[in-house]
Length: 243
Image (tube, rainbow, N blue to C red; front, side, top):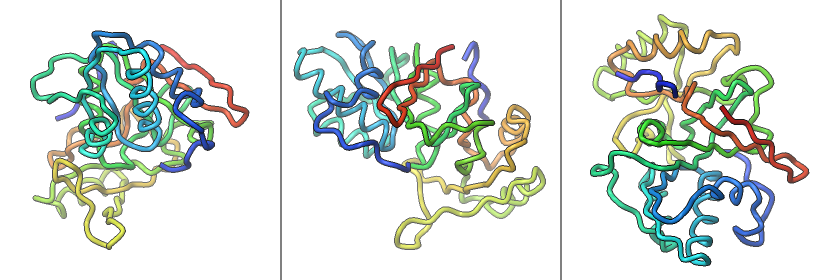
């Protein structure tokens, strides 16, 4: 079962000539120093941080290690020369950089458009500090779920029964498929249901209800995992939210 953390893709950014020109990514990776173990999220915005970090590591000869939330992020990080280690033998991460599908000003985050929310949540819980990067179009004026659907990772075993349980709490998840029409599978082999929220749910109660359904592996609501959120405005300025 999943519980809330204790005392814790959308549009491409404007074209950057290099990672150095990416103010959002540069601000996200600024706290990273030699000796750190860094978590890397999945998705396009997280990849901006990954590329900026790889350039900074080369330029400053930083000695860091990384763990990645997805096979794709792992591969890209390794190809860019970052040292990527097996998270299975790591107890704690110093700093996590990640993107998000949607955030709000209560610092709640919606994730899962890449299907990596289970691994990303594990990274969050293992991290001393987390930083999420978004563009301004991903900021909800009310609460998360008003713009982006909520992904729900479920087991194929008992799928119909799990969907029935979800309907009982008002969620009609659409089974996600890939570009070829095949059922989308996460890196852990789970299916994903995308559910549209009304926008006025009690998100804490909804998390509790989702966590009580045995067939639900994880979901996209990250209510208290974010320590910092960086928002890239259209004029290039960066808004900084912090707990």
